[in-house]
Length: 458
Image (cartoon, rainbow, N blue to C red; front, side):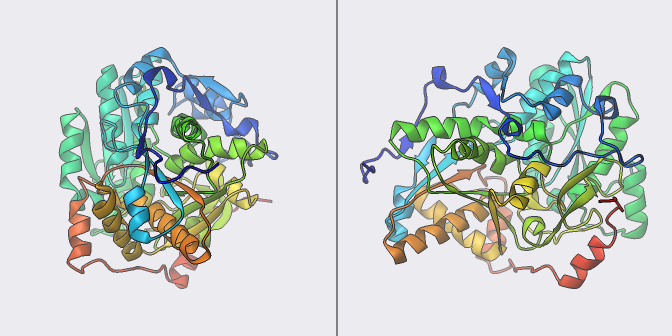
Protein backbone atom coordinates (compact mmCIF):
# COMPACT_ATOMS: atom_id res chain seq x y z
CA UNK A 1 0.00 0.00 0.00
CA UNK A 2 1.45 3.38 -0.98
CA UNK A 3 2.38 5.82 1.78
CA UNK A 4 0.21 8.92 2.21
CA UNK A 5 1.17 12.44 3.30
CA UNK A 6 2.24 11.08 6.70
CA UNK A 7 5.46 9.77 5.12
CA UNK A 8 8.32 11.41 7.05
CA UNK A 9 9.89 14.50 5.53
CA UNK A 10 13.41 13.30 6.32
CA UNK A 11 14.43 9.66 6.02
CA UNK A 12 17.72 8.82 7.69
CA UNK A 13 20.03 5.83 7.94
CA UNK A 14 22.06 4.93 10.99
CA UNK A 15 25.84 5.02 10.65
CA UNK A 16 25.75 1.21 10.93
CA UNK A 17 23.66 1.12 7.72
CA UNK A 18 26.23 3.05 5.69
CA UNK A 19 27.19 1.09 2.54
CA UNK A 20 30.62 -0.53 2.79
CA UNK A 21 30.90 -1.48 -0.90
CA UNK A 22 30.75 0.38 -4.19
CA UNK A 23 28.59 -1.10 -6.94
CA UNK A 24 30.13 -1.75 -10.37
CA UNK A 25 27.43 -1.77 -13.06
CA UNK A 26 29.83 -3.28 -15.61
CA UNK A 27 29.20 -6.66 -13.97
CA UNK A 28 25.49 -6.58 -14.89
CA UNK A 29 25.35 -4.93 -18.31
CA UNK A 30 23.93 -7.18 -21.08
CA UNK A 31 26.60 -5.84 -23.47
CA UNK A 32 29.89 -4.20 -22.44
CA UNK A 33 30.70 -0.65 -23.54
CA UNK A 34 33.30 -0.19 -26.30
CA UNK A 35 36.93 -0.12 -25.09
CA UNK A 36 38.98 2.99 -24.48
CA UNK A 37 41.57 3.38 -27.25
CA UNK A 38 45.17 4.60 -27.36
CA UNK A 39 45.18 7.71 -29.60
CA UNK A 40 48.37 6.64 -31.36
CA UNK A 41 47.77 2.93 -32.02
CA UNK A 42 43.94 2.89 -31.83
CA UNK A 43 44.29 -0.28 -29.76
CA UNK A 44 42.56 -0.74 -26.39
CA UNK A 45 44.54 0.92 -23.61
CA UNK A 46 46.18 -1.20 -20.94
CA UNK A 47 47.17 -0.44 -17.35
CA UNK A 48 50.63 0.75 -18.41
CA UNK A 49 49.06 3.39 -20.66
CA UNK A 50 47.22 4.91 -17.70
CA UNK A 51 49.99 4.52 -15.11
CA UNK A 52 51.53 7.98 -15.72
CA UNK A 53 48.32 9.61 -14.48
CA UNK A 54 46.57 7.24 -12.06
CA UNK A 55 47.57 4.85 -9.24
CA UNK A 56 47.23 1.17 -10.09
CA UNK A 57 44.36 0.61 -7.65
CA UNK A 58 42.19 3.13 -9.51
CA UNK A 59 43.26 1.72 -12.88
CA UNK A 60 42.15 -1.75 -11.78
CA UNK A 61 38.81 -0.33 -10.59
CA UNK A 62 38.42 1.36 -13.99
CA UNK A 63 38.51 -1.98 -15.81
CA UNK A 64 37.14 -4.26 -13.09
CA UNK A 65 34.33 -6.70 -13.79
CA UNK A 66 33.68 -7.37 -10.10
CA UNK A 67 30.12 -6.50 -9.04
CA UNK A 68 31.15 -4.99 -5.71
CA UNK A 69 34.37 -3.39 -4.50
CA UNK A 70 35.01 -2.94 -0.77
CA UNK A 71 35.42 0.63 0.48
CA UNK A 72 38.67 0.95 2.49
CA UNK A 73 38.22 1.60 6.20
CA UNK A 74 40.23 4.84 6.00
CA UNK A 75 37.81 6.11 3.33
CA UNK A 76 34.76 5.08 5.36
CA UNK A 77 36.19 7.04 8.31
CA UNK A 78 36.16 10.25 6.23
CA UNK A 79 32.79 9.43 4.65
CA UNK A 80 31.30 9.39 8.16
CA UNK A 81 31.75 13.16 8.35
CA UNK A 82 28.57 13.41 6.22
CA UNK A 83 27.41 9.93 5.17
CA UNK A 84 24.82 8.52 5.17
CA UNK A 85 23.22 11.62 3.62
CA UNK A 86 19.50 12.34 4.11
CA UNK A 87 16.65 11.50 1.76
CA UNK A 88 13.78 14.00 1.86
CA UNK A 89 10.20 13.82 0.70
CA UNK A 90 9.30 17.17 -0.86
CA UNK A 91 5.89 17.56 0.80
CA UNK A 92 5.85 21.35 0.42
CA UNK A 93 6.82 21.28 -3.24
CA UNK A 94 4.16 18.64 -3.88
CA UNK A 95 1.50 20.87 -2.27
CA UNK A 96 2.66 23.93 -4.24
CA UNK A 97 2.37 21.95 -7.48
CA UNK A 98 -0.97 20.41 -6.52
CA UNK A 99 0.30 17.03 -7.71
CA UNK A 100 -0.59 13.55 -6.51
CA UNK A 101 3.02 12.54 -7.26
CA UNK A 102 5.36 11.79 -4.39
CA UNK A 103 8.72 13.51 -4.88
CA UNK A 104 11.86 12.39 -3.06
CA UNK A 105 15.30 13.96 -3.27
CA UNK A 106 18.64 12.61 -2.07
CA UNK A 107 20.56 15.57 -0.64
CA UNK A 108 24.33 15.56 -1.13
CA UNK A 109 24.84 19.20 -0.10
CA UNK A 110 25.60 18.07 3.46
CA UNK A 111 29.18 17.12 2.51
CA UNK A 112 32.16 19.34 3.49
CA UNK A 113 32.36 20.61 -0.10
CA UNK A 114 28.60 21.12 -0.36
CA UNK A 115 28.13 18.58 -3.16
CA UNK A 116 28.39 14.89 -4.08
CA UNK A 117 31.98 15.26 -5.32
CA UNK A 118 33.80 14.14 -2.12
CA UNK A 119 32.34 10.66 -2.62
CA UNK A 120 35.07 10.08 -5.22
CA UNK A 121 37.59 12.77 -4.20
CA UNK A 122 38.26 11.03 -0.88
CA UNK A 123 39.05 7.56 -2.30
CA UNK A 124 41.08 9.08 -5.14
CA UNK A 125 43.22 11.01 -2.66
CA UNK A 126 43.52 7.93 -0.44
CA UNK A 127 44.71 5.60 -3.22
CA UNK A 128 47.20 8.18 -4.50
CA UNK A 129 48.60 8.66 -1.00
CA UNK A 130 48.97 4.89 -0.66
CA UNK A 131 50.90 4.89 -3.97
CA UNK A 132 53.41 7.48 -2.70
CA UNK A 133 52.10 10.41 -4.76
CA UNK A 134 52.77 13.90 -3.37
CA UNK A 135 50.50 16.13 -5.49
CA UNK A 136 47.26 15.86 -7.46
CA UNK A 137 46.26 18.11 -10.36
CA UNK A 138 42.74 18.53 -11.67
CA UNK A 139 40.25 20.70 -13.51
CA UNK A 140 36.99 22.11 -12.20
CA UNK A 141 34.00 23.82 -13.75
CA UNK A 142 31.69 25.45 -11.23
CA UNK A 143 34.20 24.60 -8.50
CA UNK A 144 32.50 21.76 -6.62
CA UNK A 145 35.04 19.19 -7.81
CA UNK A 146 38.05 21.42 -7.14
CA UNK A 147 36.71 22.12 -3.65
CA UNK A 148 36.11 18.43 -3.01
CA UNK A 149 39.59 17.38 -4.13
CA UNK A 150 41.24 20.14 -2.08
CA UNK A 151 39.31 18.90 0.96
CA UNK A 152 40.24 15.26 0.26
CA UNK A 153 43.91 16.12 -0.22
CA UNK A 154 43.88 17.92 3.12
CA UNK A 155 42.72 14.69 4.77
CA UNK A 156 45.74 12.74 3.47
CA UNK A 157 48.48 15.39 3.38
CA UNK A 158 48.61 15.81 -0.42
CA UNK A 159 49.16 19.03 -2.38
CA UNK A 160 46.33 19.96 -4.74
CA UNK A 161 46.53 22.15 -7.87
CA UNK A 162 43.34 23.12 -9.69
CA UNK A 163 42.63 24.68 -13.10
CA UNK A 164 39.16 26.25 -13.08
CA UNK A 165 37.24 27.16 -16.25
CA UNK A 166 37.70 30.92 -16.65
CA UNK A 167 33.97 31.71 -16.89
CA UNK A 168 33.28 30.02 -13.54
CA UNK A 169 36.48 31.38 -11.98
CA UNK A 170 35.19 34.90 -12.65
CA UNK A 171 31.56 34.14 -11.73
CA UNK A 172 32.26 32.30 -8.45
CA UNK A 173 35.10 33.94 -6.47
CA UNK A 174 34.14 32.23 -3.22
CA UNK A 175 34.95 28.83 -4.73
CA UNK A 176 38.54 30.01 -5.13
CA UNK A 177 38.60 31.08 -1.48
CA UNK A 178 37.14 27.76 -0.33
CA UNK A 179 39.68 25.77 -2.36
CA UNK A 180 42.51 27.86 -0.90
CA UNK A 181 41.08 27.44 2.61
CA UNK A 182 41.34 23.66 2.18
CA UNK A 183 44.96 24.14 1.06
CA UNK A 184 44.61 23.96 -2.72
CA UNK A 185 46.23 26.18 -5.36
CA UNK A 186 43.91 27.41 -8.13
CA UNK A 187 44.43 28.97 -11.58
CA UNK A 188 41.94 30.27 -14.14
CA UNK A 189 41.94 28.21 -17.34
CA UNK A 190 43.18 28.73 -20.00
CA UNK A 191 46.33 29.84 -18.18
CA UNK A 192 49.83 30.89 -19.30
CA UNK A 193 51.29 28.12 -17.11
CA UNK A 194 51.00 25.29 -19.66
CA UNK A 195 51.59 24.76 -23.36
CA UNK A 196 47.91 23.85 -23.79
CA UNK A 197 46.79 27.05 -22.08
CA UNK A 198 49.22 29.27 -23.95
CA UNK A 199 48.09 27.83 -27.29
CA UNK A 200 44.44 28.64 -26.56
CA UNK A 201 45.28 32.16 -25.32
CA UNK A 202 47.33 32.85 -28.44
CA UNK A 203 44.25 32.17 -30.58
CA UNK A 204 41.59 33.44 -28.18
CA UNK A 205 43.01 35.91 -25.61
CA UNK A 206 39.54 36.43 -24.08
CA UNK A 207 38.62 32.71 -23.96
CA UNK A 208 36.00 31.85 -21.33
CA UNK A 209 37.54 28.38 -21.19
CA UNK A 210 36.03 24.91 -21.09
CA UNK A 211 36.42 21.75 -19.04
CA UNK A 212 38.25 20.21 -22.01
CA UNK A 213 40.89 22.96 -21.90
CA UNK A 214 41.24 22.75 -18.12
CA UNK A 215 41.70 18.97 -18.35
CA UNK A 216 44.49 19.46 -20.90
CA UNK A 217 46.32 21.81 -18.53
CA UNK A 218 45.99 19.56 -15.50
CA UNK A 219 47.00 16.43 -17.45
CA UNK A 220 50.02 18.21 -18.96
CA UNK A 221 51.40 19.19 -15.54
CA UNK A 222 50.75 15.74 -14.04
CA UNK A 223 52.49 13.99 -16.93
CA UNK A 224 55.64 16.09 -16.44
CA UNK A 225 56.24 15.20 -12.76
CA UNK A 226 56.81 11.70 -11.34
CA UNK A 227 55.44 12.67 -7.92
CA UNK A 228 52.21 14.10 -9.39
CA UNK A 229 49.06 12.35 -10.60
CA UNK A 230 45.90 13.60 -12.21
CA UNK A 231 42.44 13.21 -10.64
CA UNK A 232 39.18 13.39 -12.59
CA UNK A 233 35.87 14.30 -10.98
CA UNK A 234 33.50 12.65 -13.46
CA UNK A 235 33.26 10.65 -16.74
CA UNK A 236 35.52 7.65 -15.94
CA UNK A 237 34.22 4.31 -14.66
CA UNK A 238 35.99 4.42 -11.30
CA UNK A 239 34.55 7.86 -10.57
CA UNK A 240 30.97 6.74 -11.19
CA UNK A 241 31.71 3.59 -9.18
CA UNK A 242 32.59 5.65 -6.08
CA UNK A 243 29.41 7.69 -6.42
CA UNK A 244 27.14 4.64 -6.15
CA UNK A 245 27.00 5.13 -2.38
CA UNK A 246 24.28 7.68 -3.24
CA UNK A 247 21.98 5.18 -4.91
CA UNK A 248 22.74 2.37 -2.47
CA UNK A 249 21.70 4.60 0.44
CA UNK A 250 18.60 5.83 -1.40
CA UNK A 251 17.46 2.24 -1.99
CA UNK A 252 17.66 1.52 1.74
CA UNK A 253 15.92 4.78 2.64
CA UNK A 254 13.02 4.26 0.23
CA UNK A 255 12.63 0.71 1.54
CA UNK A 256 12.11 2.15 5.04
CA UNK A 257 8.93 3.87 3.80
CA UNK A 258 7.84 1.12 1.42
CA UNK A 259 8.52 3.03 -1.80
CA UNK A 260 10.06 2.23 -5.18
CA UNK A 261 10.53 4.95 -7.82
CA UNK A 262 8.47 5.10 -10.99
CA UNK A 263 10.69 7.85 -12.43
CA UNK A 264 14.30 8.67 -11.55
CA UNK A 265 15.81 11.92 -12.84
CA UNK A 266 19.28 13.39 -12.42
CA UNK A 267 21.35 16.16 -13.96
CA UNK A 268 24.22 15.13 -16.23
CA UNK A 269 27.40 16.94 -17.18
CA UNK A 270 30.04 14.22 -17.12
CA UNK A 271 27.71 11.70 -15.47
CA UNK A 272 29.00 11.05 -11.94
CA UNK A 273 26.04 12.37 -9.93
CA UNK A 274 23.51 10.80 -12.27
CA UNK A 275 25.34 7.45 -12.39
CA UNK A 276 25.82 7.45 -8.63
CA UNK A 277 22.09 7.67 -8.04
CA UNK A 278 20.89 5.65 -11.03
CA UNK A 279 23.20 2.64 -11.25
CA UNK A 280 21.99 0.78 -8.12
CA UNK A 281 18.39 1.31 -9.27
CA UNK A 282 19.28 0.12 -12.77
CA UNK A 283 20.73 -3.03 -11.18
CA UNK A 284 17.37 -3.63 -9.51
CA UNK A 285 15.56 -2.94 -12.81
CA UNK A 286 17.76 -5.41 -14.71
CA UNK A 287 17.01 -8.01 -12.01
CA UNK A 288 13.27 -7.45 -12.42
CA UNK A 289 12.72 -6.09 -8.93
CA UNK A 290 11.49 -2.66 -10.06
CA UNK A 291 10.89 -0.84 -13.33
CA UNK A 292 11.61 2.90 -13.09
CA UNK A 293 12.00 5.21 -16.08
CA UNK A 294 15.56 6.58 -15.72
CA UNK A 295 16.02 10.04 -17.23
CA UNK A 296 19.21 12.08 -17.62
CA UNK A 297 18.76 15.86 -17.82
CA UNK A 298 21.35 18.13 -19.45
CA UNK A 299 21.55 21.84 -20.40
CA UNK A 300 20.20 22.86 -23.80
CA UNK A 301 23.39 24.88 -24.38
CA UNK A 302 25.65 21.82 -23.93
CA UNK A 303 23.49 18.91 -25.15
CA UNK A 304 25.91 16.03 -25.62
CA UNK A 305 23.33 13.25 -25.05
CA UNK A 306 20.46 14.80 -27.00
CA UNK A 307 22.31 16.42 -29.92
CA UNK A 308 25.86 15.10 -29.87
CA UNK A 309 27.10 12.05 -31.74
CA UNK A 310 28.06 8.70 -30.24
CA UNK A 311 31.67 8.46 -31.40
CA UNK A 312 35.26 8.13 -30.24
CA UNK A 313 36.66 11.46 -29.07
CA UNK A 314 39.31 12.92 -26.81
CA UNK A 315 38.33 13.78 -23.25
CA UNK A 316 40.25 17.05 -23.47
CA UNK A 317 40.72 19.88 -25.96
CA UNK A 318 44.43 19.39 -26.66
CA UNK A 319 44.03 15.69 -27.46
CA UNK A 320 46.23 14.39 -24.64
CA UNK A 321 43.79 11.78 -23.27
CA UNK A 322 42.86 8.35 -24.61
CA UNK A 323 39.93 8.09 -27.02
CA UNK A 324 36.58 7.25 -25.43
CA UNK A 325 33.37 6.16 -27.18
CA UNK A 326 30.88 8.65 -25.84
CA UNK A 327 28.19 11.13 -26.76
CA UNK A 328 30.19 14.20 -27.69
CA UNK A 329 29.87 17.67 -29.15
CA UNK A 330 33.51 17.53 -30.28
CA UNK A 331 36.58 18.17 -28.14
CA UNK A 332 37.00 21.62 -29.76
CA UNK A 333 33.54 22.66 -28.58
CA UNK A 334 33.51 25.71 -26.28
CA UNK A 335 30.17 25.85 -24.43
CA UNK A 336 28.28 29.04 -23.76
CA UNK A 337 29.29 30.29 -20.27
CA UNK A 338 26.05 29.23 -18.59
CA UNK A 339 25.86 29.38 -14.82
CA UNK A 340 25.60 25.58 -14.44
CA UNK A 341 29.37 25.40 -14.85
CA UNK A 342 29.53 21.77 -13.74
CA UNK A 343 27.53 20.73 -16.82
CA UNK A 344 29.71 22.52 -19.40
CA UNK A 345 31.55 19.48 -20.75
CA UNK A 346 31.75 18.52 -24.41
CA UNK A 347 31.38 14.79 -23.76
CA UNK A 348 29.63 12.35 -21.49
CA UNK A 349 30.67 9.35 -19.43
CA UNK A 350 31.22 6.33 -21.70
CA UNK A 351 29.04 4.29 -19.34
CA UNK A 352 26.14 6.76 -19.47
CA UNK A 353 26.58 7.11 -23.24
CA UNK A 354 26.47 3.32 -23.66
CA UNK A 355 23.27 3.09 -21.60
CA UNK A 356 21.59 5.78 -23.69
CA UNK A 357 22.75 4.10 -26.89
CA UNK A 358 21.32 0.79 -25.65
CA UNK A 359 18.05 2.58 -24.75
CA UNK A 360 18.32 1.55 -21.12
CA UNK A 361 17.99 5.17 -20.01
CA UNK A 362 16.65 8.29 -21.73
CA UNK A 363 17.85 11.89 -21.97
CA UNK A 364 16.26 15.35 -22.21
CA UNK A 365 17.71 18.87 -22.38
CA UNK A 366 16.49 21.93 -20.45
CA UNK A 367 17.02 25.69 -21.01
CA UNK A 368 18.53 27.51 -18.04
CA UNK A 369 15.67 29.93 -17.35
CA UNK A 370 13.29 27.02 -16.81
CA UNK A 371 15.89 25.46 -14.53
CA UNK A 372 16.41 28.59 -12.43
CA UNK A 373 12.64 29.01 -12.12
CA UNK A 374 12.50 25.46 -10.77
CA UNK A 375 15.40 26.19 -8.40
CA UNK A 376 13.65 29.27 -7.01
CA UNK A 377 10.40 27.36 -6.52
CA UNK A 378 12.30 24.57 -4.78
CA UNK A 379 14.07 27.07 -2.49
CA UNK A 380 10.81 28.79 -1.58
CA UNK A 381 9.06 25.52 -0.75
CA UNK A 382 11.77 23.14 0.50
CA UNK A 383 14.12 25.74 2.01
CA UNK A 384 17.30 24.68 0.17
CA UNK A 385 18.86 26.86 -2.55
CA UNK A 386 20.05 24.27 -5.11
CA UNK A 387 23.26 24.58 -7.09
CA UNK A 388 22.51 25.50 -10.72
CA UNK A 389 23.39 21.99 -11.88
CA UNK A 390 20.65 20.05 -10.02
CA UNK A 391 18.03 22.64 -10.98
CA UNK A 392 17.98 20.78 -14.31
CA UNK A 393 16.84 17.62 -12.52
CA UNK A 394 14.41 19.60 -10.36
CA UNK A 395 12.88 21.13 -13.50
CA UNK A 396 12.41 17.65 -14.97
CA UNK A 397 10.94 16.35 -11.69
CA UNK A 398 8.47 19.26 -11.61
CA UNK A 399 7.55 18.61 -15.23
CA UNK A 400 6.84 14.95 -14.41
CA UNK A 401 4.86 15.92 -11.29
CA UNK A 402 2.68 18.28 -13.34
CA UNK A 403 2.01 15.48 -15.83
CA UNK A 404 0.77 13.46 -12.86
CA UNK A 405 -1.48 16.38 -11.90
CA UNK A 406 -3.05 16.27 -15.36
CA UNK A 407 -3.40 12.50 -15.48
CA UNK A 408 -4.21 11.86 -11.82
CA UNK A 409 -1.36 9.34 -11.54
CA UNK A 410 0.37 9.08 -8.17
CA UNK A 411 3.90 8.32 -9.33
CA UNK A 412 6.98 8.17 -7.11
CA UNK A 413 9.65 10.55 -8.47
CA UNK A 414 13.23 10.34 -7.19
CA UNK A 415 15.95 12.87 -7.90
CA UNK A 416 19.39 13.78 -6.62
CA UNK A 417 19.94 17.25 -5.20
CA UNK A 418 23.68 16.94 -5.74
CA UNK A 419 24.69 20.20 -4.05
CA UNK A 420 23.61 23.50 -2.55
CA UNK A 421 23.93 26.85 -4.29
CA UNK A 422 25.31 28.96 -1.45
CA UNK A 423 28.37 29.85 -3.53
CA UNK A 424 26.29 30.32 -6.70
CA UNK A 425 24.14 33.24 -5.55
CA UNK A 426 25.48 35.50 -8.30
CA UNK A 427 23.72 33.19 -10.75
CA UNK A 428 20.45 33.52 -8.86
CA UNK A 429 20.93 37.28 -8.77
CA UNK A 430 21.32 37.27 -12.54
CA UNK A 431 18.13 35.23 -12.91
CA UNK A 432 16.08 37.27 -10.45
CA UNK A 433 17.15 40.53 -12.08
CA UNK A 434 16.27 39.26 -15.56
CA UNK A 435 19.83 38.97 -16.86
CA UNK A 436 19.77 35.20 -17.54
CA UNK A 437 19.16 34.27 -21.16
CA UNK A 438 18.53 30.91 -22.77
CA UNK A 439 21.12 29.76 -25.25
CA UNK A 440 20.21 27.16 -27.84
CA UNK A 441 23.26 25.68 -29.52
CA UNK A 442 23.22 26.72 -33.22
CA UNK A 443 23.36 23.80 -35.64
CA UNK A 444 26.27 25.34 -37.58
CA UNK A 445 28.31 25.68 -34.38
CA UNK A 446 27.65 22.04 -33.55
CA UNK A 447 28.63 20.88 -37.06
CA UNK A 448 31.87 22.86 -36.88
CA UNK A 449 32.85 21.29 -33.55
CA UNK A 450 32.02 17.77 -34.74
CA UNK A 451 34.14 18.21 -37.86
CA UNK A 452 37.27 17.87 -35.71
CA UNK A 453 36.43 14.40 -34.36
CA UNK A 454 39.44 12.08 -34.64
CA UNK A 455 39.17 9.46 -37.42
CA UNK A 456 38.63 6.04 -35.87
CA UNK A 457 37.85 3.07 -38.15
CA UNK A 458 34.61 1.25 -37.39
